[in-house]
Image 1 (cartoon, helix red, strand yellow):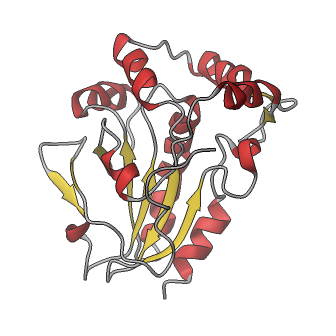
Image 2 (spheres, rainbow, N blue to C red):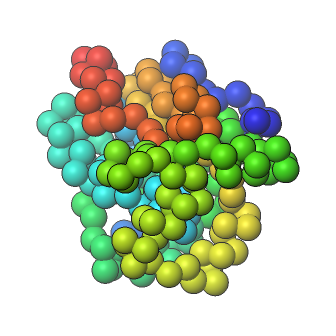
Length: 216
């Protein structure tokens, strides 16, 4: 894999500042909003075209209250324009706080890898089998697993989605736990521990809550 120009931000390093448009309203959400006030669990996803991300957003919505009980705020960044995200979440509402970053600027700032779509990578993705949520009868090739989830969700890509696929794929996703001083204390980068077998899979609820408890 060819990774991002900068290596991923590691635990113990300052979290890069950001300021992104909110999805819910006309506000801007920045890291400065949390510094000195609350730790932040930051989820960096790609566009809504990604069925793995859509499912992770549902999971993160159920996790939000559990993190708040540990005095940790959550923010998920979706790589689509605010108005596109608003249309989606109008019909699939979430209490999760969301920010928009269609150009993946925060992924670059945090060094989240974007592999180069070489023929070798494409062949490897055709051969590897995944079951990221554990609910498939058996692991499937990545594209087949994505199609199963797409069909289950009844989601049909729009022209906006298709344009975002062209710009974004195969950008990886990541989670970061940032303390109230703005220092990264924990990070989980897609594929960092399992290679391509980790496509679509990020840390479990228990691991995320453990990282939140470790802040105190």
